[in-house]
Image 1 (cartoon, one colour):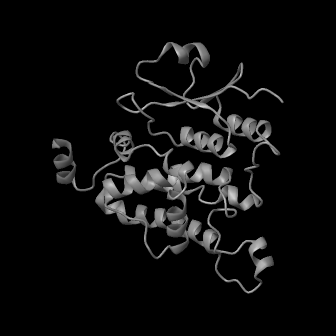
Image 2 (cartoon, rainbow, N blue to C red):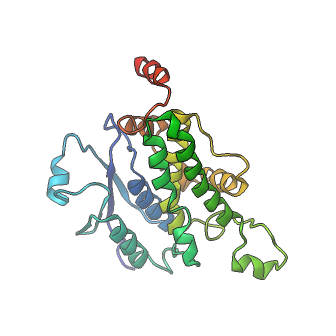
Image 3 (cartoon, rainbow, N blue to C red):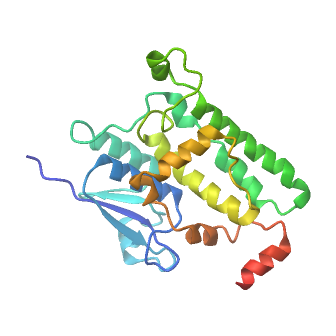
Length: 248
């Protein structure tokens, strides 16, 4: 029997350097390795102190990076490709999507979210919010539309009942999108008092299902980490609220 590989994932450390910090790319890889069902070690990297480990293993790189036995990989997409190719069936599950459309679902949300949350002008808020909402509606439509395998099982289905983007289980697409959606949810609530509309039933169901899964719930950074990470870019439209929050 082949010896199990030594796998170490380096992720961004929290502000206090004690836990996992806010980084959707780190969480993406964390989820993938967990879903592969292999033993691995997590090491947090304090970017402020620039530890010797970072200089020696991945000079000039930002987490995440992966050490697989003696090989070090520093690019997020390359790490994903390496894990999918190396940790493959029959020992490990395949995580790629059945449908290529699932990979692109929700891909424009983070861009419109960033424009919405960074906007300092109350008069532009409605425009930015509508553009952001449009991308949420688009994702919701994909989640509510039955995929071909669902229609094979029930040709009369008009609304999808699948749990996740591509199927009943997490895929690489979910590992990419869900960490970003978690950030969107936390930041919009804190800085805009904006909740994802309950009318978007497909998206609401998707998130509810995801938060039940250990591989997502336990890889999410604390909400306080996300809020602190966005302090320098998110803008309170109500300046008094911002001042009140800063005093606390």
